Image (tube, rainbow, N blue to C red):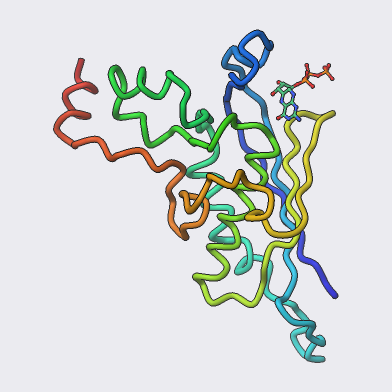
Length: 187
Ligand SMILES: Nc1nc2c(c(=O)[nH]1)N=C([C@H](O)[C@H](O)COP(=O)(O)OP(=O)(O)OP(=O)(O)O)CN2
């Protein structure tokens, strides 16, 4: 069966606090790549005319828009990271730029959330493609690949978070009242 493979790069920052003594508990950033492998839900022949599984531009447009507009330059934090409350108190207008995960935002967790999100987009668009494998290259020397169903590897308590919704959300934080965020932005 054919696979369509799309790569997008993005910048991010995160910190991993499960090991409070680890070097990764200090916020730091990476320039990463996400590589998605898409396959048709059912095997299909080339039609002998256009001979495409799907036009590249059509298959990747929604996904790359999400990566560019929402994942790029997001700050990734675990749901119980106290820095979330810091943003609530001091920069609520930036809460929407926090990508929040169940537990630490490791490369494994990001791969599972991004793969689930991409499949939510594809299903909602009525697309006959699904992401069957997704790789996040955290650094030029470290990468994580996930194949299969992200629901099988996400923590059992994770439930239905932003990664299951076909929208631009990257967290499930309560929305900040507009008046408050404008007031803080003016400070
Ligand atoms: N299984 C995982 N292990 C680690 C992750 C991860 O997401 N999954 N992440 C990190 C940190 O983000 C760290 O920034 C990267 O770790 P490290 O390999 O130490 O990075 P370096 O670039 O410094 O590696 P060198 O090859 O030694 O230069 C840690 N672990």
